[in-house]
Length: 306
Image (cartoon, rainbow, N blue to C red):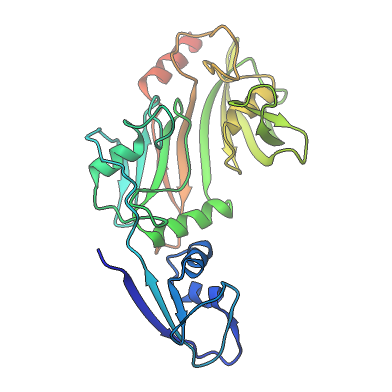
């Protein structure tokens, strides 16, 4: 596959930063992606390589941009069944089962959601310069539910902007041991690496981690458990699990942040990404997508309702 070559002439009355101008020429690319092309020598001004991203361009300047083809990631698609909730030319929304890792990592070089999506649609456009599905957010291995993947650069940027601006509404269901201090509430805390266990995350003092915010409400109370609805406004690693631990009501079945002895007959933690409210590319009104509780969580819920 050859490079894509685009040529432009800057006609603005005042000088402008090169990277800022190119953002208007390539709305499907982030500024960081365009800055990378400039720094790697793929952009020229009047026949000469651009010196830097912040270089000023004058009216009449001829800009040429070479966009190299996606770099092969080395990933091979696998024939793994997917529960597809929605799909169009821009994105795919999948109901991920518990036990499936989202993307390849140490110890998980096959059987991931990325492998499954590539197996389902090997022609998905390269995102961010690599031939891989455009992951926009993540779910823990044992968390089930809705996850969105972009099919092209334009959709990827559109979706990333919504998550960054916190306009996406995510709803999770969590069954916890005990109950929170109040039926409804808001948790604001910093999350960082646990200083004692580097593979775990922890609530840390302000300034030593990244901001995390969630709101919750009680859906149903039981003798020893509570069903909570969570709305995370940030997307930190293990955020809802840590917030439940922080509230004194850890998620049932959570082997890392929960009770040592599991209180119900369940082989995973009870956390499910149940609903997603999001505006799709080229649309103005948000859509709502939902995924039912999987069978093992329904069974656990029935057990506490007896």
